Structure formats: C-alpha cells, structure tokens
Image (cartoon, rainbow, N blue to C red; front, top):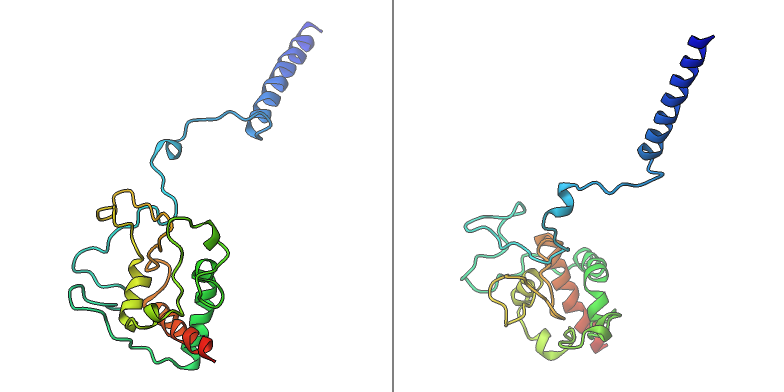
Length: 185
C-alpha cells in the first residue's frame, strides 16, 4: 500500500509538472524570450533603398545608361500599354497624383512641404518620355540629403524601380501622356 501511495504522489507531481510545461508551451502564459531578430537593425519599405551596383545590368535588360542622357521610349503607346499603365498608375501613383493626375490624390492633403505634381500640367507634359521614366525610376530626393544616408522622402516621390519593371515604367509613362490627351477633350 505504501508503494502505491508513493506512485500516486510521483505521478501527481509529474502531472503537475507536465501541466505547467503545457501551459508555457501553448502560450497560455507568454514569456518574452530574447531573439536575435529583435535586436538587429530593421528597415521599413524603401527607407534606405540601395543604389544600383556599378556596371550592373537589370535582369530585364538595361533601362538606361548613366551619363548618356534620358532614354528613348521603346514601348509604343498602344491600347495594351496604356491599359497596363492605367492599372499600374492606379496601384502606385493614384494615391498621390489623383485619379486624373492633377496632384489631388487621397494622401496629397497630408503632404505639407511638397505637393504631388500635376501630371497634366504643361511643365510635366513638356518633359521627354525618358525624363518621366527617370523620375519614376529614381524618384525625387530631398536635396538636403547626400546620396541615400537616412533618406527621408518627406513628401517627395520615392523611387519605383524596385516596384515596377522597366516595361511597366514605360507603360506608366505612356499612360501619363494619355492623361494630358484626356484632359484636353
């Protein structure tokens, strides 16, 4: 009988021990363990975009050659390009530049220092396709910053070269040209 009581006590202690272990294992009581992911540097989206490595060519081919001026638009402004450009514009540009490209997007009211450009204005439309392509690709940086140290876009356009392929950027340029034509009608 004494052996039976000792076994009951041992199993009861083991049961309590396993129960406590299960409580911790299933996050009923959370213990914040230090993980190396928590103590390393982390960056927000496009907080510090890396410059393109020297003498490298993107997977989809060379978009432009630095120092050679603005590139020529290799994508014809056909229905397919303009439709794709409209879709990409609505995803990546419309929130700032507005549905009709006049710089009155939903977040334009919150941009205090520098408002988004009116893409239908004579100033923007007088630029070459290559100039628009380079602006979409490289963005508009804060002139007070040297090349990328803690880039704060502070109301200026971030580069979209990581978000859009070369072809997609040309499609957006073709769509921006159609915004001006649509406004004139």
